[in-house]
Length: 296
Image 1: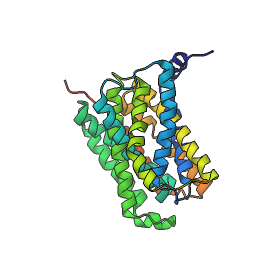
Image 2: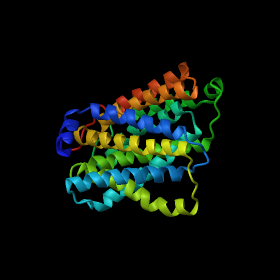
Image 3: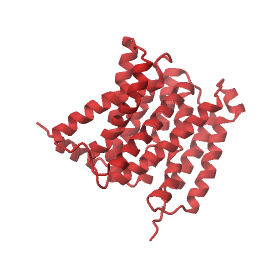
Image 4: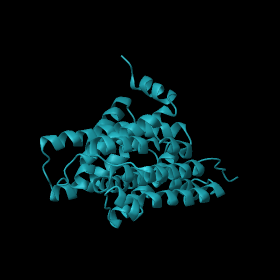
């Protein structure tokens, strides 16, 4: 019988492929969210996702006999808060925007990572990062300009766009904290604090405003929990073995996956403007994550 340690060793040997798997599973999570009726509140979806993830993670922690409290608890809690905020914003954007566009906005976070890495983990903000910011924002404007949205028959509220960007910022901050924690904490302890904080903070809200899912919605909710757990596991292992900046570039594959699901399942239109804008955002991501020089 293969032990968890042997499975982890195999995962660690995958290197960059861990992040490819993470992007794929996260994209399946977005597909599940998009398929759930709007009568189920966003915070309830995040709560269910957290409950499933927490149960799975605590089971693994118990098997491995790890101290679930961790070493750097304040930073672990901060990571949990950032992850919770990011997930609420991401789910909101997925529900209120085309899947392809919400995914592109979410994946501006590598550019934010480069900035926050300069502030929090002593990496220099280079000229590349400044250029990347400009190119990335041009790409976003190409995608979100009114003429482009009119051409694909899409209306998006400004509030949805702002919430999507706030989610990207929280994601970037969460990535930086995960990278910092990966030097001292077990992978599963880092993963555990995310759903733990979500579960504790959202439980009162869910109980007060409970909406009972039907069987179809329950299947999609379970899918959210399973695919997010798989994505989070591969992501955390990948971040542990690669620089945060390099990892974030690989994770841009989720834009490709999200666009494919949008076309196949929701009849979304992918035109030349979207491809141009997404390419500019990707170019900005590549520029922002290359040749990052640490201060001495």
